[in-house]
Each structure stands twice: as structure tokens, then as C-alpha cells.
Image (cartoon, rainbow, N blue to C red; front, side, top):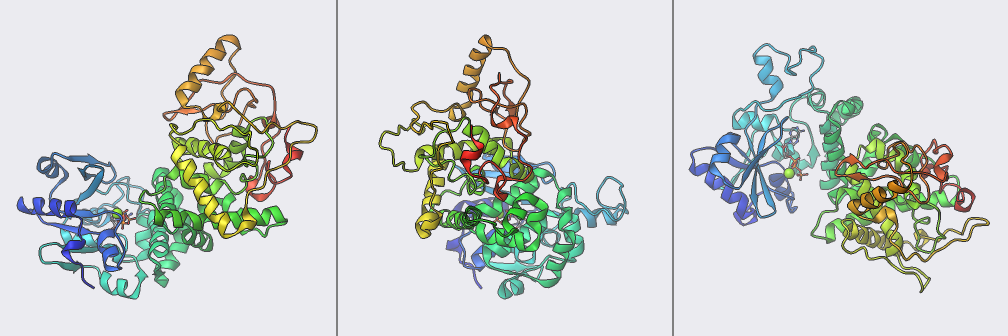
Length: 498
Ligand code: ATP
Ligand code: MG
């Protein structure tokens, strides 16, 4: 296994050279070395160095220091970032040397969780504090040699994911590593070494101890990496999905009771496979909002069909369907809101059989490209299996459905415009108490067909919307997610809509 110099990103090489000229050590490290040795194209190039973040800041004008738990330097080359981290010692080992328990909060030996990881060390210590042997390899660009302090080369050869050191300790120190093991196994088609696997299973419940943002970030990275379907199979097979999103896990595990249920399930897996094809064929990695929308679409596909007769509040419908899953996945407010808009926008992007159907102009909206890409993903999945094609739902009994909509629905307006309109309305009508801000938040009190669910403007709740002609949400929210067949789309749409 050999890495050639011409396989190295020139900017990453430049960073290494500049640091070395300043008499510090610097190597390429981690994912890029692993991927090159596996014959894969690295997603990015990371550098490990003996220079401290402050020294790096002095060396590079195009440098920004980020992170608190783990401080490192981002060195910018246009839109490209070369992540450059100072050699670390394992913070627990360092603290043990000083007679502490390593977590800095004095909560006892049994708690190994690492809360800060800024203890600088040597190159060897840095290799050993990394998560898996395949991720602990350094590459010296001058000698063109791989430096292996952790027996990573043999594991790469054997295609094994194995923790560096005792997996029991390594997973307790940082349970996020359990998700990362799944990611590498899925993405690089590797096997998880048996003892590593056994300890993953033992400690999977501890993922909840990690910061929510880290869990959610690692979860979405699983789906963006071109192996979303395989990752989901592994998450489900290992019971990790049960920990992360129990409702979704249950929905995927239960035997469908009827034909629509079977199709929803088949769509789920087919969409994930199509996300992977899209990731491989596009330069641009899918956004978190796009993959979230893809996960949420299967039970909504028919209701969001362009020829489905109009219903009072599609935005609310999406909220209800997605609620528990978004909540459990801890998606950010911004991504949840974008995912909702992406889903709603697909109603105008899928082909309609109605030649009169008018399409609002969406092309300057933030979610437009993602919505187009979702339509492309779904079309790809449906063309491989026409049985999965979206089918318009019938108009509700006694209610005339209006399919052609000429005005951009409120839910798809950019936030500022909506807020403006809402302020205007409030002058005329009394304000009501707050209502749900995003998918995943409790929907109360009921929104109306005139007042869609309030939106989030840069992470904050918008002012309370006026409400309400009571509609759908006046009924209790489904206790089980729509995916399970009891939500608004589980039963026949016409039976629920008003
Ligand atoms: P990707 O291709 O997804 O970027 P990667 O291996 O480069 O994979 P990163 O998250 O970019 O993963 O991390 C870079 C390197 O930092 C890893 O290869 C690993 O050596 C180390 N690392 C990352 N997260 C952890 C962790 N939680 N514990 C220990 N080491 C870690
Ligand atoms: Mg990386």
C-alpha cells in the first residue's frame, strides 16, 4: 500500500510544508490517509502538527481557530478548509498521570467521558488517542511514507474497524465513536472487529451522554457520505437506531399491515439508495436538510403529490407527520424548517397531470435546489421501481379540492416576508399564544388554514401567529408517527381531511 505525492491535495501539502519550515512536525493524518490506502477519494485532508493553535494563527493569515472541546485551526483556501490540529495526548491518560480521574469534574472513576480534549502531546500520543486503528495513520509527504504507531496498516489490509486500545474504555470515553464505527464500516465496506462490536453493543445507550449537536452531526454525516442505505441497515441491525430515533426504528422494523404500509417502507429504502446514487454522481454533498426531508418523505409522498386535492394546511400536515422523528433526531431548527419547506416545495416540482396547474416561482428560495434534488432522488427511485410512484390522494368527502394554486403558499414564503405579513395581520386581528416553531415541537394551539405554523427566523421563534379556525391540529396529535400507519396518511387521506 503506497500513497503517491500527486494524490495529495496541493493546499494540504502547502500547509504541511509551511509548518515544517517553521521547525515544527506536520503530517497528513486520519481519513485522508485511510481513504487513499483503500483506493478511495478522500473527502478532505487533515493535518496534525506539533505547532499550537496560536502558532498556526501566526503562520497563516487565512487561519481561524475553532472549537472549545477540541480547539483546532481551520486554514482556508477559497471554500476549501484544511483542518489542522495540534498533537493531543489522551486527556484521560494525561489526567491519570496527575492523579485525577480525567473528566475534570470529579465524578468518579467509572465516568470516563471526555469533556475537554485540549491536552497537547507528541505525535505518538496523538496517534494513540485517535478512535480507530485505520484512522491513526500519519503520512509524511517528504519521505512519502505512512507512519503507523497503532497497527492500522494490518487492520486496513484485513478491512477491520478496531478501536485503538481497549474498546470498553474508548467507547466510554466518547460514545460518539460507536456511531463513527458504523460510518466507517458502511462507507468503506469494512467489518467491525468482534470485541469492538461487542463493546459497541454494550455501550450504545451511552450515546445519550454526548452533546446533542455532536450526535446529530455524526448521524447526518452517516447519511451524506454515499452509504446512507447501508448505514441505516447497520443502525437498525445494531439497535443503534432504537437509541437515536425509536419511532423510526419501530416503523422500519414492524411488518407492514397493508399495501400502503408496504409501499411506504419500500420507498424508504429505495429513497436512501437513490440518495447514495445522488451523492456519488453530484459534486455537492447533500445537505442535512435534504437528507432529513428524504427520511420524512415516504409517508408524505402521496399527500404532497401535485394532483392531490388541496387540504387545509399542508404545512401543518408535514409538521405532524414529521414531529416525533425530527424531535428524536435532534435536527437543528434551521434544518427542520428547511426540510419542511423542501417537502412542501416538491408539490410544485413533481409533474402534474393538470395542464392548468400553475407553479409559483421558487427558484430564488433557499430550499429550491434541495427541493429539486429531492425530486430527482425520488424520480430516480421510482424509475427503478414504478410500484413506488406517488399517487394523488382523492379529495376529501364532501369537500371540493382545489389543485391549481396560483399563490405561493405562506409556508414557502421566505421568513422575512412572512413575518412582515404576519405583523400586518396582527394589526387587524388579536394575537394568540405561541404555536409550534418547527417540526418536532408540540403543535399547540391549533393552527388554521389562514395561519400556518409559525416559523423560525435564524433560530428564534417568530412572533406568535394569530390563530384560528380550528382544523386538523385540534384533534390530538397522533401518538404514533405517521410512518406507522396511524397518522394523517396512515388512514385514507379523505377520512382525515376537512
Ligand atoms: P471523514 O472522511 O468522515 O471526514 P475522518 O476519519 O476524516 O472521516 P473526521 O471526523 O474528519 O473523520 O476526524 C478526523 C480524524 O480525527 C479521524 O480520522 C480520527 O483520527 C480523529 N477523530 C475524530 N473523531 C474522533 C473521536 N471522537 N475520537 C478520537 N479520534 C477522533
Ligand atoms: Mg475528515
